[in-house]
Image 1 (cartoon, one colour):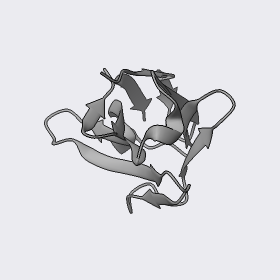
Image 2: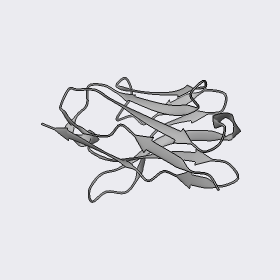
Image 3: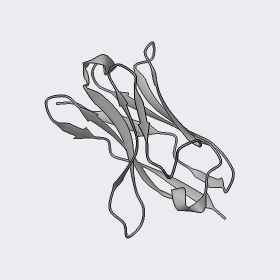
Image 4: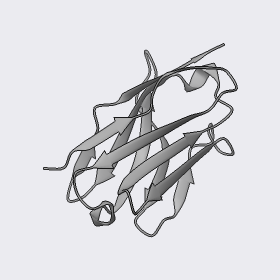
Length: 114
């Protein structure tokens, strides 16, 4: 069983920045790919950014140029740096990982005030 623990979500003003972290319960290199998803109130969960084991990032159009997904190998953590935040970025952000199946974190709330 794999556990993913997110942290870093909080209330921030529009235009501000936040950094989310995800700590998996196993070596980060064992995952075929990892990523961040978000779920806004009344909307379906959507992909924000993903990262392959080889380090190739893919971003949703809505966050390109503003968000950066990265991996800290020494700390065994996945990160999402979010800049120039907008109210529409508000939602619960989930860490995702694939290793012989799908795994999700419990989510961390990000609220961007206008």
